[in-house]
Length: 123
Image 1 (cartoon, one colour):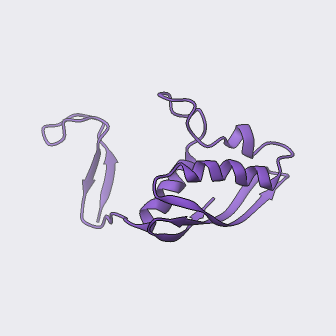
Image 2 (tube, rainbow, N blue to C red):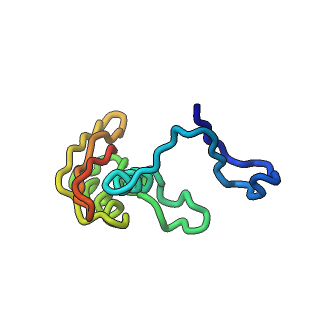
């Protein structure tokens, strides 16, 4: 069984608070297309203004994407700008997005071209 937790108390084994402590052997490091897709998904989960060290970074979910009356084209443009900021992404191949206007919920996938091949990102 594997365990992953955040170090909150310094010890002699790990004196750095904020590090990740890993125990067990079932963790897998991703590489290639999978790593780039994971980086895109992380970037898209990071909202504009969330990072206190640079509030100009992040995906503009509330500011430009999940607003009333926004077009699918403008959503794709905003997401495309964020996706292209990820190292290794060459471009967007295909969009498969759906907006629920009542709940302002966006779902779907984006097929991307990367330097390692093609991948699919969940939105």
